[in-house]
Length: 295
Image (cartoon, rainbow, N blue to C red; front, side, top):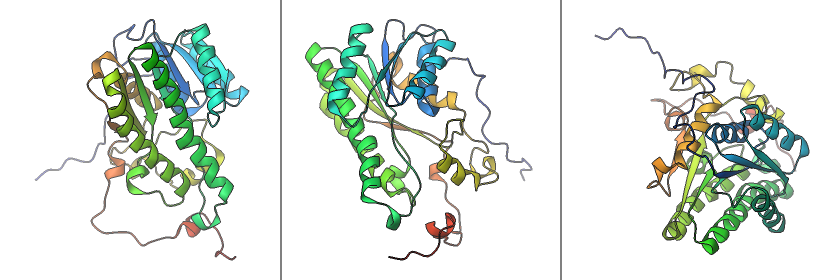
């Protein structure tokens, strides 16, 4: 009879360690949307450690400044461009600016998204449109611009779309984001087939629970209701943001050229967790501390 106690998944190597050989991305440009905060910033930083020049797109100057600071802190070259990814014309202008200063990006990471918890019955039409417009439409518009330019130039490239596990399962409390992320997952699979013959690989990257200092107040408030976060994960720990960065650098690297149309989930198997018995159902309104709905 085994007497072993659960120990969880081991911690990763220390921050500053790279998952690939030094210089893997020397001479390459990686464009990351929303790279001024959180997971996007962590992904961009890991590409920079491996030699990539980083182009950051964001609507907010303070996010561009934060992203620049993070990349320069690891000795990387960085360009920041103000851009609203809901507007195709702004995306085209941003790509023009990056090509003029750096080069046509070799890698595109579609990280920018919008999200906040809200019961579906309370969601305004504007809230739905905004989240879908940024998360789904913005991801497509950026991918289309990247793909068109590479097709015209006859050059290969790599796209990574940051997704979410509720693209498969549904996301109570996040109907707008879950629907948009389901579209993003399908986009990965569709564009990988359409553009594979032209040398463009397209993959998805789905993060699990990666707490970080840039989490929005509403997301952090929801997360704070889970008191013991490590014990709620099959890994018995949460993710470290560098682990997501390592996964991204691998997917776009020369070592992953035959991987396309795939969505890699980096969450310690949490999204596949099931219990032998189901807990009592608690409505989204109750979970969020809201009163009964009234018209």
